View 1 (cartoon, rainbow, N blue to C red):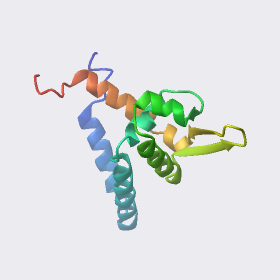
View 2: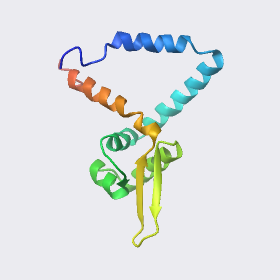
View 3: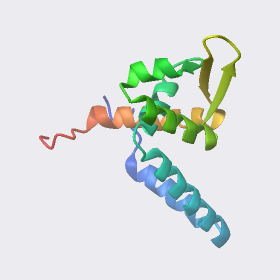
View 4: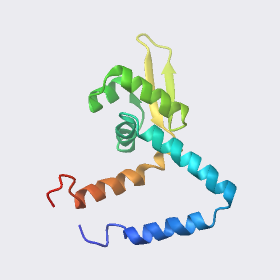
Length: 133
C-alpha cells in the first residue's frame, strides 16, 4: 500500500484540533458526552463486530445470520442488538410469521461509520499488533 492511500495521521489530527477549537463551551461538553457514550457502547463485547458485519453487508440481517457469522452467544448478541437499536444505530423489524422472523438493518447513522471500518482495515494492513515489527 502506498503512502498516498493511507490518510496522513498528522493532517487528520490537525483537522480534529481545528474542529475542536471552533466549538464553544456548551458544544464541547456535549461532544465529550456523546463521545463517552459512543466509546462505552462500542467497547461492549461484540458491538464493533456487529456493526462491522452490517457495514460489509447489503440489506437486512437476521439474528441467526449474525450469530453464525460472529460465533457469539445468543444472550450477548441479543443484548448488543438491543443496545445498538436503542442508540439509533440499527432498526429492528419483526414480521408476523410462524416461525417469527426478525431482521436488523443499519440506520444512516451506522452507515456513516463505514469509513471508520475501512480506515481500521487499512491501518491493520500497515501495522502489526504482534509487536514483531
